Image (cartoon, rainbow, N blue to C red; front, side, top):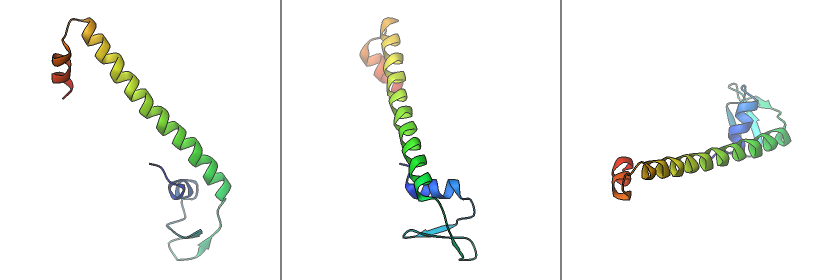
Length: 82
């Protein structure tokens, strides 16, 4: 699962550590960042992650249905994917 800190790091490559809500660079200097932008990016990336998971499930169901239409039994299909 993607976190807010992941997005803060992605949007601000100079940040190497976050303690609480304070971000620091490699020299332990405090760095300001846009928390609202990171939050917006987090929402976007989490939605993309959910969509990818849903697409993977749909693709698997589609593949299984196609294998059954080709004449494989459910046990044969399960053996293929196990």
